[in-house]
Image 1 (cartoon, rainbow, N blue to C red):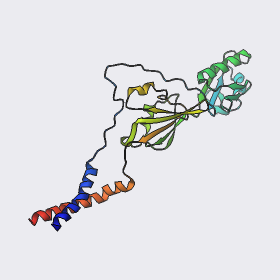
Image 2 (image 1 turned 30 degrees about the horizontal axis):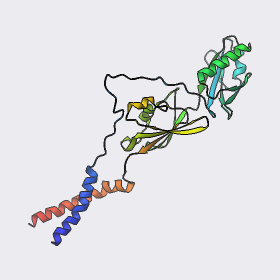
Image 3 (image 1 turned 120 degrees about the horizontal axis):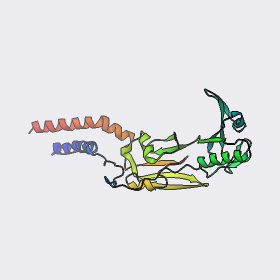
Image 4 (image 1 turned 45 degrees about the vertical axis):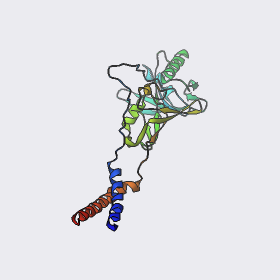
Length: 258
């Protein structure tokens, strides 16, 4: 009787270890409701609109670069093969303005880079400074913030667009334990913050207002289910083989004593 009780006691931890070792998390899958050969709307990436605290690089070009030089006077000289030009970076202040050389204050908040380029070009022409100027504006601070299960990172964005799928492809966190049906995107617009819920498991993702990310968006990837602590991981790694070996030895001894 004593040996039977002892056997049961020794087998309990072994069973627990085996259950923990053999259990596997449910597989995650993206875009579950997509169907083959069934097209749906493909919306182009919207142009980014400038916000307070953005930084814009603006260059003015002309066939006669000496005419464009005063509009680039705030920058640092960059040597080119045939000529030199000046690149200037401007911060959008709390009122949504930038202080541009010669032209003075320009309101840019809420405008796209293309709209800013056209406005500066038209104003330079209207005032008679340059007949056909070429203006190039670029956003210098396009980045997004990722927190939660995929790690904590500030990710700089090259180019003018980034969507959630492209972002996830860049991450190195543990996707198996990420709650992809409930991803939160926090966006700041017009002085207000708003949280959006996004599921990466449905094609409705493509129609979300936050599918295409904007500067300074915060993406929170929540953990999925219960995770083992570091101690639990160590237990499974080092102690479970020992428990299994002891339990097996007891079973063999009991079998031989029959």
